[in-house]
Image (cartoon, rainbow, N blue to C red; front, side, top):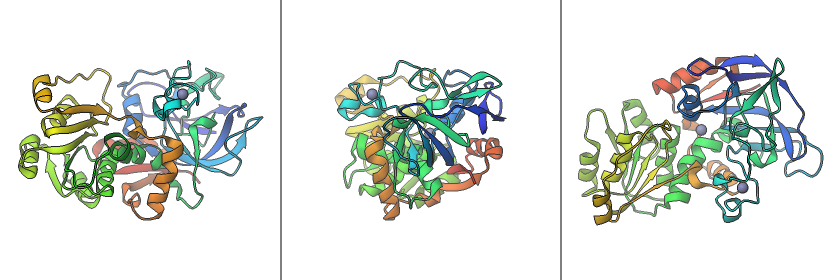
Length: 363
Ligand SMILES: [Zn+2]
Ligand SMILES: [Zn+2]
């Protein structure tokens, strides 16, 4: 069974033939159909987020259930499922209060299944599974709590990207910040997540939607997804330009990057009473120095949203319906598809900013 495995930091993924165990109770085996290439995988590849190797990366994916472990199961053979990269133990205080993406009910680290092992081996050595799933793989055995059944008419690459970039971006607008109609919105960073923040803002009827990136081709994408204004952060002063466009600042600002500069920009670009939301996750070493005085005097809020603050079981089917009803555009997000063996090309393109989203598709 072929998988793209990270064996060493700062090296390309290796396509290896792994051995896989059958699903245990509460688990299932899913035949992979499509899996997105995301900046989070890249952060792992370059060592931004410490983890344990070897590891099958990949966390934005969809497939079809082929086998379920013994005993009762919340999924059935033949189900079409989107992977959730957040655990959902169902009994911790976060799962019980509608914030399952913060689930802390499992003691095992996030690269192991809840029982503290994985189902993958290479030449007898255990191979870890990113986010307890590891979807750069022809088939995945994982806990069924990471699987969300969805309608069967949803195209596979679309289903895959709902599992990370779409949920994260649209959820940041609708579930975390709760942007209201007419509000002015700033979005910094126009990759897979940022473009979904832009179209989330359009979905809820935001007023001005200002998109910022360093690449003009990404700003063109942003316009297509609903940005009313675009700013190239390389050539223009972001905060000054936002203030000029909005007569004093935006009501909501989102940072899909996570650098010190962009975190400060989303706070500085707010109107009094505005809310800034950090969405993009940088290296664990990044710090950002805010100015508390200006925040308090103007009652600004700096908040954050992980995984769009969604509840995957509730929100993935909602996002699928929004796509099928043509209320959100996910087709234009998928600019390229690859075979698993070409996955490193996909990361090359992601780094260059040449694609909105690249997706690996399986036969
Ligand atoms: Zn992702
Ligand atoms: Zn939990």
